[in-house]
Image (tube, rainbow, N blue to C red; front, side):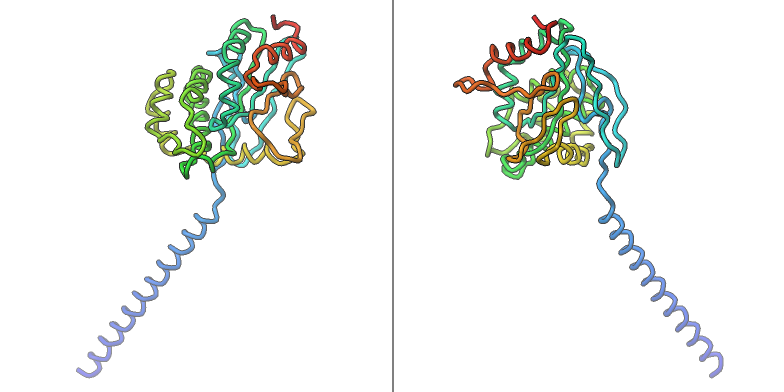
Length: 273
């Protein structure tokens, strides 16, 4: 009986030790998985139709389809033909009031050039003004929303971009909620379950950060130009036409001076009238 009791005690001890050992292994496995997840680099894959980090529009409803930048990949600059057209590249932050000023003033004439086939527009949404939306991260979330449009509804990219400027929150105020972003997008034609999920999940959050970091360091050269980011820092809007940076005249109109911008463009693109 004593021997049988001793055997039972040993079995209980082995079972207890095994259970403790298994528990320790489970805890260690959880810790390892957490560490791996924390250390895992963010997903930086871009949306389709933005292989250059921007979407190339050939009319207000037409675009050039491209593959997406893979996770950890680099953008491929768009090749611009020397064909007499105005190849306009815009770097914008949707929280930027000067971008809004340029957009709202010049939208009609740029739309006309696009639809006449005498210009292309490549739009690069970036995020440098999150600090001006009361913790709402509006710049990043709006740039992600535009990436969602490029992925799922690119024909409405121009319309949604314009609609966002029409509903731009004031600097220092609380930026728009996802519900408000989606309502604005829907008013411009971009709708659907894929778009909603992309906005709510912030699917391209990592890409927004990566695309912004690629273009903002001082000394960075913009593709298809000799224009570089000045030592004073990157700013929006940055507007490049056929490799030349546009700087508005020193007048009260500033970036809203449509005549000055038209003169600049026509001087570089003979097909623009």
